[in-house]
Image 1 (tube, rainbow, N blue to C red):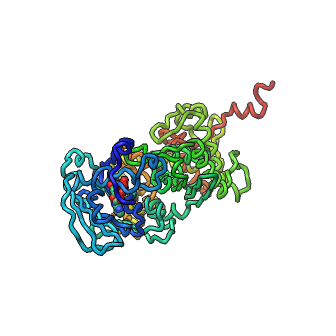
Image 2 (image 1 turned 45 degrees about the horizontal axis):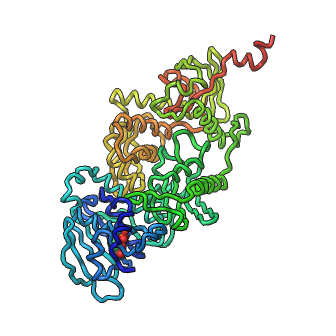
Image 3 (image 1 turned 180 degrees about the vertical axis):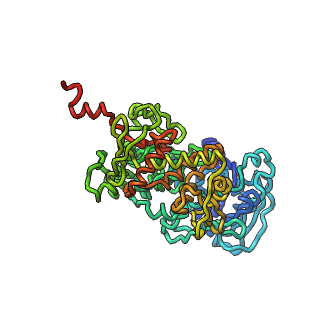
Length: 581
Ligand code: ADP
Ligand code: MG
């Protein structure tokens, strides 16, 4: 279809303009145009996180020389003709506004050639005013150069975030499009530094690794589901793989990345009762639905869609994910296999209890975070005196729990949760006293991270140093760990680093002391003894002694209980020694 001006009545029905608010929004529009043009190769280069330059080159159909001027005009598009077409859009673009909007806030050069002509042509737009069309030699396809973004809109320039953040937004955008279009080769480079390159051979796992990290990508479960007029495929996390937020859930509807959607809720609900409170699944889901069933003209940045039959799509997603999940891993029983045979319990007990605790905590009153582990929410489950009395160790059961006797009855202690608490309080105390002892590793360890994580870690190296980690950037998204807090001596440095990075993946920097608390909780969780680990009697005793000195010994830093207390009175009642007379 040639590029035409939309008639005023169609133009007026289009949801308010493309919003070009940051470099990543430019990249998004250019990539979408290239995909709409059927490109098989899309190469993006940026300078200074896209402020100085964004260049997108593709080998798509190109734009005829005599249409170049139209391409950069507002409401000129080759993708939409009549008003009815608005209700069955099968291209990513349709408003005919992106190039015009970008051209009004930058210095834009559009160069293109179509297969049928010998020469190509180029047009420049500067701050909204168009130059002449000139003939140039060029291969078939299109190159768009956007220089000095917002040079004439200082207000928007002021709202841009730090380079790392803007760059990360671009990275994450390209990675997601690469995932949705695995048959297209994408390349993203900043200057001569390549940040992403895909093969275009249709393999999504490799791209998932760039998005979520190699280890997570390996664990993701592949799902497919289909029912009348609806098709879903994707990769979802098994129950054991979780995140602290929903940011790693990616949805595509008809090849369009949908960022803020009730579909994400549907996905999370599919994991209901299977994950600990405050933990979220991750994954990438691609939905295909007839274009007339979905309205894409609802959001200025086209980041949301509306379904004609919302409820049906929502429950389809929920069912497909749940079914996929259960097909790979049957739900464990909620009843704890506490006295089960040794072989099973060491594997299963941790998980079973997680679920049981999860239910209790939810009943008690919503989600708990490391900060609000006050007894209020779990008061109904546990006695409210916080400190634990002196305990006499009886022993370890199922390689997971310690049994102890106190002056007021029996205590069952979850060794992992308890150790987490102990490490957490020690680390925070050392941190507050400003002296976290650090121990040099015999041999430094090099840890490789996914590009996005590497970037966030890099920003936070000073915080890590404060925590007794000596970590340095080792190039190409890897880091060298030379020293760790003495508290974690002997533990795996790469596990510690990965744990830390999970918390830094927030775009906005939370308050520093919050970062530090979360970070401490996360690292302690990773470093604590695990369920299923046999402890020597000395280790068991040391753990109880440490717990006795804790400020808040009854919950782990994430709010799960560390212990169950069966009072003498309760035992008497259970054995019919009391009240039965
Ligand atoms: P829209 O994508 O909504 O149509 P744009 O302003 O993004 O609006 O682009 C205007 C027109 O320019 C498109 O309809 C298309 O015909 C053409 N165009 C833009 N970019 C490309 C490209 N990379 N390859 C081929 N044609 C393009
Ligand atoms: Mg477009």
